Image (cartoon, rainbow, N blue to C red; front, top):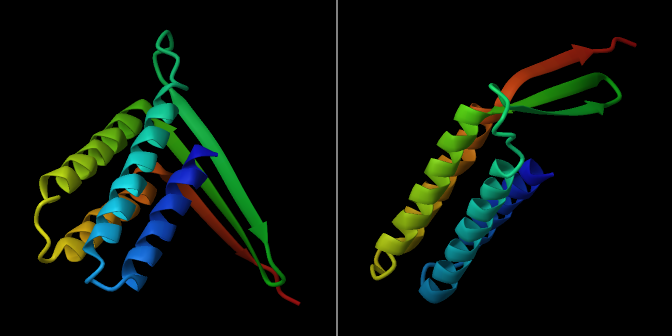
Length: 137
């Protein structure tokens, strides 16, 4: 569930940032700050699921979709190391937003770049397998 919240927040905030004109700097700042905060808090809530007594933590989530011609299966596997690295990246994006807060020139480009980095690193750190199968008529 938290994977979905993080992904939806990233996609919606990037969509809104691309749609907002660059002259609305205050709205862009508030939107980017709130989306980075939601993503950071959701990743910290993922950290609460870790049992510290176990040697190896792994959280598996599987999504599957069956279409008319094709079936699709996606397995997300989040280990402790991947989760800590993802939290570090979320924290750094949050700090970067605070560091460039006073710069109005190219603020939108910087924020879109930071959120795209975060969006591309989420599947890199969490997807363990993708399966496609085609059904012939």
